[in-house]
Image 1 (tube, rainbow, N blue to C red):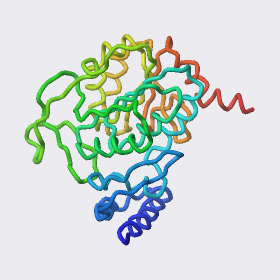
Image 2 (cartoon, rainbow, N blue to C red):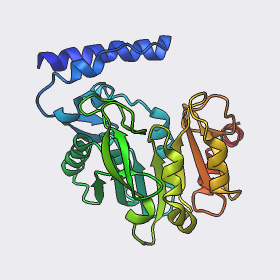
Image 3 (tube, rainbow, N blue to C red):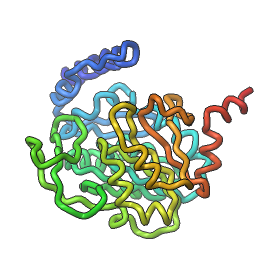
Length: 289
């Protein structure tokens, strides 16, 4: 109990410093790892299981916060206005923050999520079970552009996202990757996709080329200005039928790519296009005028 109180108190300090001063204090994951017992957490009307094996990943959820509030806001703007029978694919699901949120919408019928960290996968499964989300499928796999052996930095128990690395990286493990085309079976759902894989987003897209061509999913993927350099390749891969937008902090969309964290790709001939147009910043301002 003492460590939980300490973790929550320090999480508030970390959150304040990050949001007000732009400074991320170290050590929150270390404090969280001292919480040895399972807990139930509430966030936006969903229940999450605090799984000690993935304790480092819960710093924000402990105090009812999210590291990516803009994605939650975007989902709240679009999912209730979409047709019934949606599917959701989450690549790099971590402890399932987005998995559990999206699975709770009544028009989402299938959720399939990937993460190579066994503790993260177990955390997702436990949270899905406590919410009675029988339509959530967790796969303990790395997703890439082909089925092959690759070097992966897992960062087990450390609370940081793993990533594909070269063979010279200390501490990497040999894992066999899969692809979205291999894992996603045919159905009649319309799909949203979320991809957060520490710079390997293009590889994930390439491994799902057939799925993307067939389904025209709405795709949210991480793109951090100044760190990632694959945006021209992503544009070329998706083709002219897809439009790219920046996901703003308030959950709306615009085309200013100078300072980004997540981007949204939407196919012009998909069911998602009209609701994404309504979420564009300029359109919202006109509607509220």
